[in-house]
Length: 395
Ligand SMILES: [Zn+2]
Image (cartoon, rainbow, N blue to C red; front, side, top):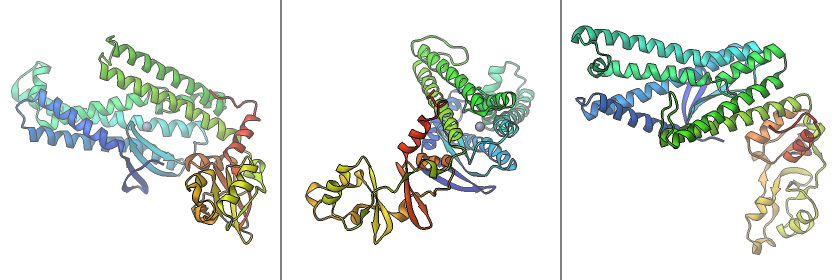
């Protein structure tokens, strides 16, 4: 689970900041202070720094506006949105499930970049007003000289306007899972009526673009000049980093779609491990190791106390206890109590249960029915089910 800071709610949607944002904030502020200092050496240090901080905060608000646009359209199309998290590469809206129609997907995806670009154009128009006033006042026509004469507010508006347009255009790159990739997927989905094929192809395009970024980045590191991006070690490294991130995001989001698609019409009951061996809560660890762990392939054992399911004990729990204490310590002392476990039921759709396994980072879910333990759903059970599907192959 990502850690971060909660800022409260907007329109009922929780807004979180990932810690990586503090890094971005410092980087943007410092970079702007340098830029402002160079273009306006006459400004005091305090003015340049203050302007840098203000511009960073407004940049943050712009990214939030982009994400809010996605979230509000998703909600209007009947998809619940839990939270928005701002992290290193921008923002992520935690939209609970994929849209049900290509039209919904198109609208949800396209509104984010559209918001950024419209916002950018508006900010540049405002900056243009400031610019024309300065031009009229100073009678300077050379654009470079004119920029040097601009006041602090106009300078900041120009930066914010162009950064928002850049943000909008970057997100329109047609590589899934970027917004542009989602737009591409919705178009392919609408044309073929096959979500999985549409995802496969937009993921291929995403990976191809990611590799272009990586190759261009490496070329930049070795001194080649790339249009728009220029050249240089740091810029090249950034491009490689972004490419690598896009590539793994494309692979992961495609696999998730395929897995959810395969698990879509199955329930937990179908693939769960029935009647796993259970361990009494007052067993010593020595006994647990000799009689259960060494005699089975299982990594985790349900613990029972007077016939009632009270927790789970795993190999990791045993590893945490020094050998000398194995004769004295009991299973109930080292187990994870049932109140701390993530549970499932036989009737739960398998894709939901799989999302629990993945997002909570656990290896198995106890399957409960009427207060009784009826089985375990282990990662290996889901993997085996997936292997039975001929159309499941890793990209
Ligand atoms: Zn977006």
